[in-house]
Length: 473
Image: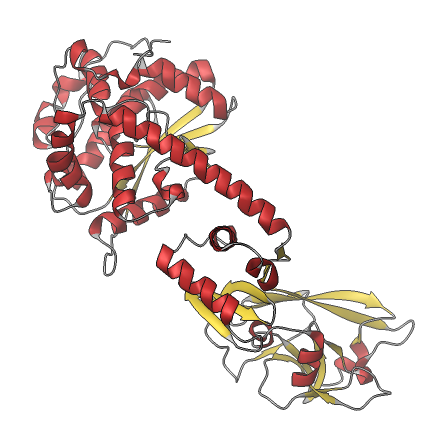
């Protein structure tokens, strides 16, 4: 399905000065210069229409990540002409990294292009911090974070075949596994990449045919960046000997993606007997051969949104989990999370700072109390003839506190008062839960501990108004 363009007699002329300033250019490629990667379909618009039809529904909102480069300008032109036939809403977002003196010109260029197509544009200005990551990685992370804030049903990215090949090589040079070697997916959650089958030369050819202009980022020529080094120094040499390397490496990435999918299915099978209520069974992990154990651990971390660690790091984590003594306290830092082991289970938890011992939050009868220091919400549910007696609880000031050490509770009036430490051990409560567990006090008397119980002196009698506690971490 070829797109039909409306006449645009003036927009190139009116932007002549700006185009020169921003290094936008026309290209003059002949059809013979287009590589074979896009065959048998030589029409990007028809290919994009087929890709979109697989994933989107009429009425959905697509937001294009518009940099102003040739790939995103071509995709803007295609999407603008497909929005009617495919019945989707289209907007665009331009991320201004504020790294180039031309950044303002690029944003203005994107504004002008979107106005021509009647497409609304959001400009997100971001600050790139790269104290630990490379500038490339930091810019990518900040850009993805800005795009993720969009409310659109899908974010459409203009990555093409050359981008895919470069990503694959970079991942391999970093020692990735098969998941990393899968490079970029055509669809991943709400990200769509409908141009992955086309090399940059095919997009430049499309731009020439439709009289499109675009901007060039001068940093794309800086070979100090890894991707640019591959693009300008390594891949031209590869192409001399292997002219079809793009298609070949693209097939390799799809083969890796298939292997990664099989690994994921195997991890799900192994996890059915090993992962329960967000806990990972250490005995089940130990019964697996090492490759499957590593695969399951990687899968478990992924379930919690944690990127796969390096092979060496993963092996070290597995060794600690499997070889520590049963009563050892294992705590493995994972950025904003921690992997901890208690007895025969491991658990991923947020890496919270220890709550201040002085924490003392009043309760005045509200339905819930936000406790960010403890990483959760304490909810109060009204009850009748059960739970904590409201009358006895509210005889004195009601507060929510944390453990200081030495606290004692008497859940059963027929048995002596016992230390919280013993009650936690008896309940099998892991140490990471004990530290952030809210304690409910009436005056200086401990009335209840979530997950353990209430003191028998505060038990509601039949017919008496009571309250139940629920802790949502």
